[in-house]
Image (cartoon, rainbow, N blue to C red):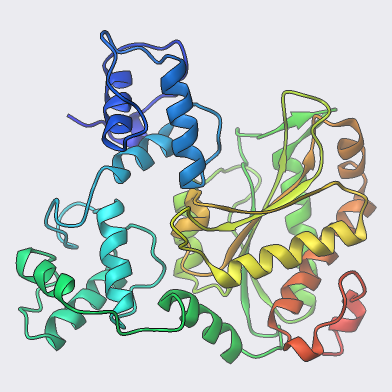
Length: 378
């Protein structure tokens, strides 16, 4: 029986047993590994294969198979047609669902983000397709529906359908920030303190940054929702569910990093994207704006913008970015993060990036010049 991702511990090089055999079997299916070792041993070739898989999937490349990598391995084994898909019973997730979403979107039916999860919007799109093409509109992707999906050509042209819808929605929302809903997500929390170093911890810094950003967003008329308090630590899926429930326009997730080497330093920003080209175009633009504003206003090393398929980025229905603001294990980064004035600079940089996202190109100011006082007059 295939293990649930939630029940999986972390497996790494040197481990052995039946779970390692399941990992190797999945890697063999994906043609990243030649065979399952006897007895199953998490050896060097397995480590390399896991890292290649993680790189391809936009996961943290550490060679460790924890719950997120385990879930991604199981999802990757499924092709469209391997099973009946519907909203009834268990929640279906996997590459087969993502393929269905891509196909429906190509035919002009809005499934929302291609996240590989068979949710209500995917079912609605499937029923719409079935009804329009003379099939039983039962919301079940079975043999007859599969045949119809394969026979029809692509109708939507000019780019990926979800990216087109996302960009159009941004354009229609207008330049003003007043009335928009932004979810601010301070990473970790409660007993999970996250990264630590130089007498600082990630959860405390994220809480402080969230409070500073929330105050600035509220000052310009944005409705802000914070995902957690000081004493709790929701899962990424719970944080994404909150953002979806309040119909947020954007999600800003705040983190700091750590590394085994004290030489690692700098700031990086992440948006949703996969190796197959599925991406949040607005999320990518927001990530770029956040990264550029932070780098322009500080002396943090620019570690650039990256696409990842982490749960929070994937499961939110709106553009979401994750800011990794320096390394607590680096003395210079830690000293900056300990300074309240520096945190004020970061909060203003993120606020400005959010405003710039909505401005028409002919009104977008150069990076690093817009200030909170300027936004109050917009």
